[in-house]
Amino acid sequence: MADVIYQAQAPLEFIPPAFNPWVLRVVHLLLPSWISWQTAITQIEADNVEVLVDLYRQFQEGKIRFMLAFRHPNTDDPFCLSYLFSQLVPKVAPQGTPLQLPIHAHFIYDRGIPLWAGSHVGWIASRLGGTPIQRGKADWTGLRSARDLFANGKFPMAAAPEGATNGLSEIISPLEPGIAQLSFWCAEDLHKAGRAEQVLIVPVGIKYSYVDAPWEAIAQLLSELEAASGLSVNPGEPTNIASVESLYPRLLTLAEHLLALMEQFYTRFYHQKLPDAKIVSGEIQDRNEALSHRLQALLNAALLISEQYFDLQPRGNLNDRCRRVEQAGWNYIFREEFKDIKALSFIERALGDRIAEEANAQMWHMRLVESFVAVSGNYIREKPTVERFAETTLILWQMITRIKGNRAFQRPQLGEQQVKITVGKPISISERYPAYKENRLSAKQAVAEVTNDLQQALKALI
Image 1: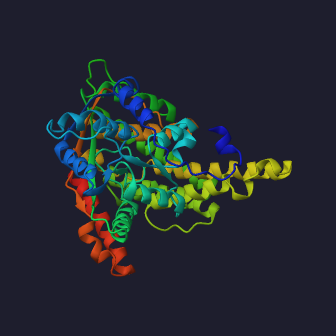
Image 2: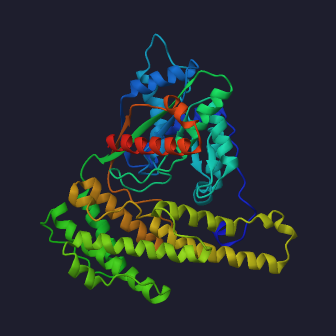
């Protein structure tokens, strides 16, 4: 990880899908034990599995091609989907007309994942038939691979239309249009080849909940975050039972304190103009609303610093802006002129490393923002469940962990969890293809409408 981030590298190479049925067989065999060993998940259930069984049957009969568009609140989501394919779908399949095993999908994954998770992840993803794509730019090599797999692959496709995890089970980030566009391209390729398969997008909801409310673990984590941020730790009286009523004021105080520290940081050292906290509090009496207003201003300011360094215009929502900053950073680190890195002089290499180090420092601001793209001031207040409280606390943990310079993707396990996967009603792309192919404006509108319909479908699955 350190070499990738702080030293200039040759351009990122595309990792071609190289499906190996033996690798998949081993993964399916070890998956239940691995989930039990490495995650807090103790149970995975699914609703409407019979819908998925029928879709796989039609796929194997050559009648349809489909894309599973799944919610992505957590880094454990791919393991849950693999459990769905390997364990739950075969159990529901009718005995008279069994499905051809294995049940699987070609995953579209972010090319950046092997950079922070390890190169072995790229190897495994490739052998499982996954195909990578670089976010934030027109990655034509990645898009061509995904497009070919959609029309001709051995399995259906699977991708997260949100593009990244947001840490929140009940808030969906704005969807990227790539899923809809790939689906229309598949319909186009089938039409040109004279093939009659129908193209579908299947929304899939994934929701995590705690088996037992882990209020004590949350209280302990809050105490650790309070200590790290310089607040006096208030463990409460031994007789007090941790609950949302007792912990919510502490969470708000911690959030306000962290926000104030970051406002001072960006105002003093990065010369950003941010709303005065006292003025905001005077104009907006509600603490949650005031917090949300200040947070959005801070996120915008932090992203502007990275955008100005990379000479980017601040267009689109926070998620879009994060993706462009990320890609600009990769372009500074993984450079085309460094293909033959051994031929570079010592000075050229040293200057390249300096640029890579500075690019990484600028991407730090983006990573901080990335954790908060879906955060609002009312998430807990609207529905004060232990799940929402835990998710918000873990986002603050992630922020503090990033500030401390530690790796933030291995989050604390607060308690045992159960997962509910829900298969939604398929969205037909083939029915919309005639309108899509009329002209460019119609195509753009069709992609936008499908993306919006998918967003609403995923919301309905929460």
